[in-house]
Length: 276
Image (cartoon, rainbow, N blue to C red; front, top):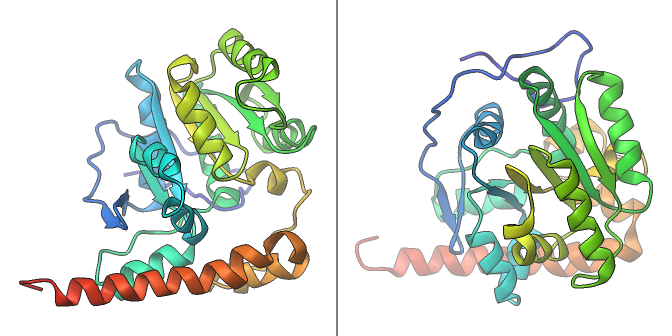
C-alpha cells in the first residue's frame, strides 16, 4: 500500500488515492461507541473511498470531552451511533482503551490529517466544502489548504454561527446543495456539529459529511497548536488550558477527572464480569 502522510505537508509530497476495497479492522467499543483502530493513512483512504459509491456517509471523532457528553446527551450518542466511521482524536481515548484492556486506536487529530486528506482529494479530483467556526475562519482555512494544494477544489465556505432550524440554516443547506461537494467538513464544536448533521443529514448533498471540531481555527492560524513534544505525549490539553483558560477550564479540570473515573469504573465492571 502506498503510504500517506497525515502530518504537516512538505511541498513535494503528492500521494495517490491508492487501492479500493480496504477492509477495516475490528473497532474498539468504548462506552457503547465503536471507534476504528486502523492507522491514520488507512482511515483516510477509507473515508475518501466513501465518495465513490454514490451514497451519503457520516464520519465523526471522539475524545474524552465528546465521550463525557454522551452520558448526559442521548441525542449526541444517537448521532454518533448513526455514523459510518468514528475515529480517535485524543489521547484520553487511547489511554482508556489501554486501561480497560481493549485494542488501542490510533490518534488522528484534524490539524494533522487535513493535509493528507487534501492531498488525496486533489489527486482524486474530490471537492470540499468548509462549514463552521467564526466568520472568515473557514475561508482563511481554504486559502491555507490551496497554498499547499493549488489544484484542490473547495466548492464553498461558510461560518457556523447560525441557529439550527433558522432561515439562515436553510440558506446554508441551499448553498451546499448548489455546490454539491464530495466532502463536507462541519466544524461547529460538539455537540452542535453532530446534532446539526443528524438533523439535516438526509438533505446534505455530499458524499461524506465529516464533523471536524476546531479544525478551521487551527488552519486559519486563529488558534495556536501546542509544541510537538506535549502534542505527541498526550499533554496538548495543558497548552490549550493555558492559552484559553476561561473557555477550557471546565472541559479539562472537571472533564478529565470525570472521564478517568468512568474509565476506572468500566475497567472494574469488566473485570467482575463472568468469564473475564
